[in-house]
Image (cartoon, rainbow, N blue to C red; front, side, top):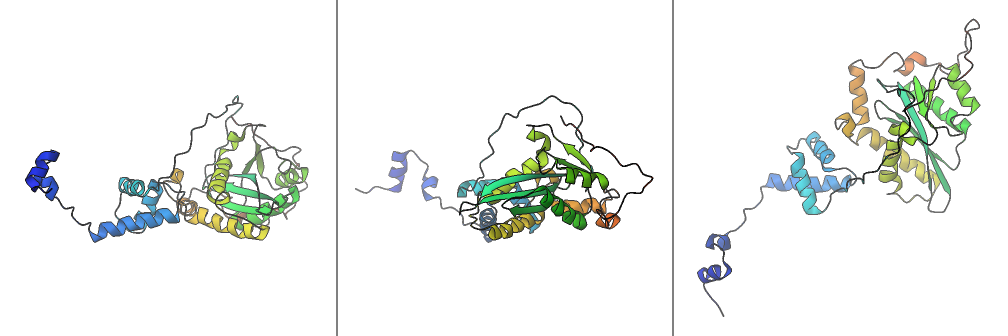
Length: 297
């Protein structure tokens, strides 16, 4: 049975112009932008729409975050928001030492995992709390205090010496050899309270990003393979991944801008302390007897 378009619209209860409507084709510029949003989202699946919009603007696209959010929703590419957690709170015993410039406060910690063949995998992570730069991700089956000291000396030769190092009370960090070396080279230590990882929030935040964006996404079979993957991800984290805490800048961009603005102190450049670890203290200078530590709230 057939009927006219007028009768069909009257029977369906819609206007005749709705039946005759034909959508306009999308402009080529809009199709290119949406295709680039999809490609960028596939290349960086862990980044949200705000960071994707920032990277698109760096490439010259005129786009706002709402447009990126709409396209990602239509394509089913939303990044689920993190579930809120109720954090434990301890008694405040003092003000924390907050980083005010590059090489002011470093933080280090370990992350444990396993390779696909069942072998233990442990990584030593070292970050700068001010610039968020990751200076080291070292993977090994077992990492001892001597290994930590050797890695620290290597990083200091490349980036300069910090004024403070924040860590938990792990045996690798409270070893007498490390405390003696730090004391001789005038690097102060900040040990958090036992059972209070939130007092070392910068490196814990880095560890969570490292696990979510690297460890949980890669199948690692050997130790050599893991070292290559971790080094590639470290370069991506420092040079490509934007940070909301840095106004969507990468740590490397933020560090360069901070250096040009003169926010670093005398210890910010490696050239000022090249012989760190090799010099000897003068005889007339009294040698400190204990490590400086701070309790954080």
